[in-house]
Length: 161
Image 1 (tube, one colour):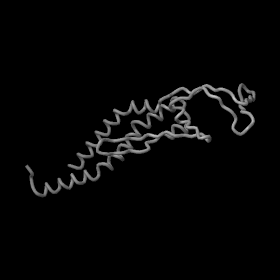
Image 2 (image 1 turned 180 degrees about the vertical axis):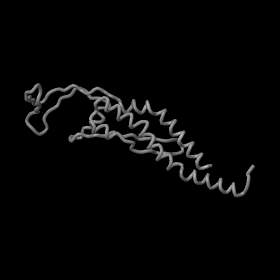
Image 3 (image 1 turned 180 degrees about the horizontal axis):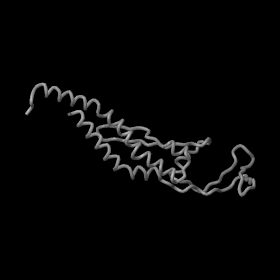
Image 4 (image 1 turned 135 degrees about the horizontal axis):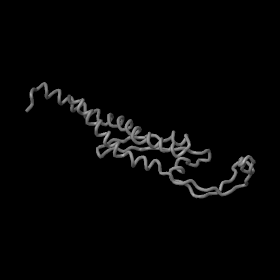
């Protein structure tokens, strides 16, 4: 039973307000919670695995899409070398053993054991696949879903108080 006409008007206003603001609320809250439950643990895992700072600083929530079907969170990690090589992808997926050659000089040069070494090109071992982003998403996904549900419930309750 409806207590009064005034109560019904206020309730209708609250429903309209919730309907109007819900997607924006979700987009903002999901971005915040994805950073907390997914991105931050991925970055910590990368630090623990000695991934270069420029790679883990590039891990971000790129986009949050909210629609009637659900929520899609796009996470991006990009760090390109001057040559255009995607270093972040190579650390995530690994690389095969490969040949390196000098691009501008006549020879590669480095110091090893206190002596300068030179090479016209040589094979280097590939990087192992770390899969830190995929693992981080998998580990944090359930926790993120629970946090989103809790925050959405609190938000709705605050509107209808």
